[in-house]
Length: 395
Image (cartoon, rainbow, N blue to C red; front, side, top):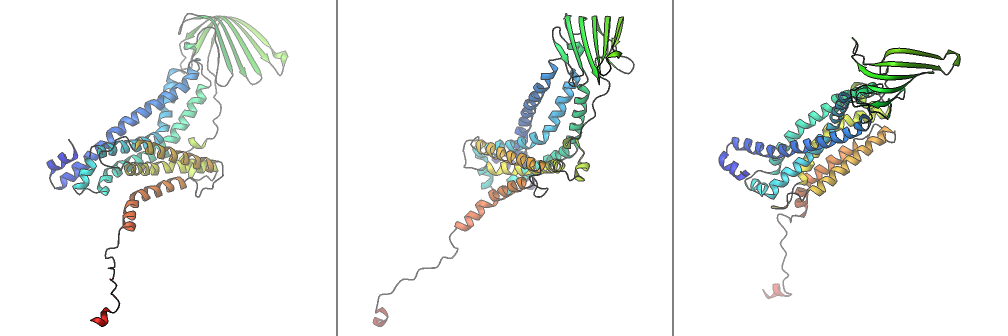
C-alpha cells in the first residue's frame, strides 16, 4: 500500500503522522539490514580468506580462525554501518521518488523536514552505536586480535598436518616434517622436529608420532616413539648432546609468546586522550569522528536522492557511490596526514567531516536560496510612459 493509502486510513489526526514516520522508517530499515548483511558477509569472507592462507599450512587451529574472523568483522562495523545506512537511504528514497510517493507526500503538505525526520532518528541511533563501537569495542577487538595472533604464532595444528610438507611456526622457532601419514588425526611416521631457543637448537627424529591427551593444564602433547634427540649449542659446541629414547612426549607449541608491542589501534580511548603522539591523535580523532560521519552520510543520502517524479529508482546510485568514495578517501587521507605529523591535531582530520557538513548544508538550503535570489521583486517598479513633446502646452 502506498503512502496515499496510509494517509486515507489514518485521517488528519496525529496518528497519521506516526504512520508516515513508521512507513518511511521501514522503507529505509529493510534495505539497511539487507545491505549490512551482504557487506558483512563479503568482508567476513575476505578476512577469512586472508587467515586461511596460514590455516591451509596447518598453522592455525579452527577456533583461532573463527575468533580472528569475528574480531575483524567487529572492527569493520564502524565503516560498514555508515555505508550501509547511506546506500539504504538512497535506495529507500529513490524507490519512493520513482513510485511518485514523495510527490504525493509533498502535495499533502508533508514537507522535506518531515520527510527527513525518520532518517534523522534512525541515523542518530546508529551514530550512537557506531560511536560506542569505535570508542570501546574497536580497541578491545584489536587488543584481543593481537593477543590471539601472538599466541597463534607459537601454535601448530598438528592434527591437520599432512605428509611431505614442512610446517613452520609463525615466529620461525619450530619446523615439523612428516614423512608418512594416512590423514588428519592419524599416526605419523618418519617425524622430524627442529626447535630453536636463543643459541640452542634441538633436532628430534622419531619413527612414529601420535597426538596424546592434553595434561591437567590443557597443554597439548605429542607422543613420539623410537626417538633420537640432538642438542646443539652454537656458542659452546662442546656442550652438544645426543639422546636416544624409546618414547618421549613433546609439546608442539612454544612456551612464552612474544611481548606485545604498542599499537594505537589497540590502545584504550582514555590513553589516547592523554597522549600527544601523532599516531595516537589520529586514532583518537578517527574514533570520535565515525559517529558524526554516520549522521552526515545519512542526511547526504536523503538529499542526493531528490529528483524528478517517476525517475528511475537507481538514477542516483552512481552519484551516491562517487560521493561516498570521495568522502572515505578524504577521511583516510586526513587520518594518514595526522598520523605522520603532516597535519597537527587542529584541524587534524576534522576538516573532512566539516567539508561534508558544509555540502549537506548547501544541498539543504541551496534550492531555497537560489529561488530567493532568482525570484523577481515583489513590487516591481512600473515603467513610466513618455509624453509627446508639447502635450502639456496643448492641454
